[in-house]
Amino acid sequence: MPAIKPLSDRVLVQPDSAEEKTSSGIIIPDTAKEKPQRGTIVAVGEGRYENGIKIDMIVKKGDKVLYGKYSGTELTLEGQDYLIMRESDILGVVS
Image (tube, rainbow, N blue to C red; front, side):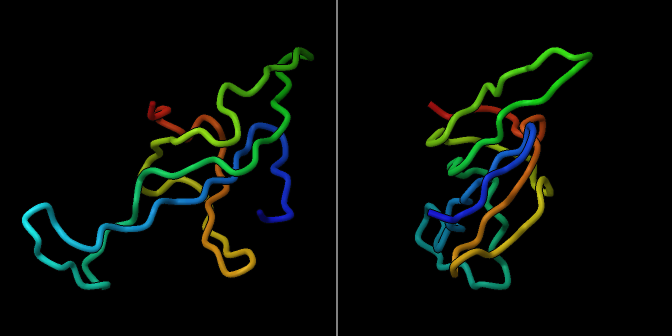
């Protein structure tokens, strides 16, 4: 687990790996792979303040989430790829 704690309403997401082959069995080369749009939350900020009132985070560590294609900032920690993004960039929680 990375030693980073997101601030405010930000979350740290570990993206799922890109698909290696299509459902029909065709292998996808690295240059044609699309960025994944789902991942697992590994760290969550404490929430944000709006007009002096604290608004808690809806998502929690371990949630599987969907996010926009170009959401967040990519970073690499300890050899792993992560995204850090605002909670509002998350489109939904996968159950």
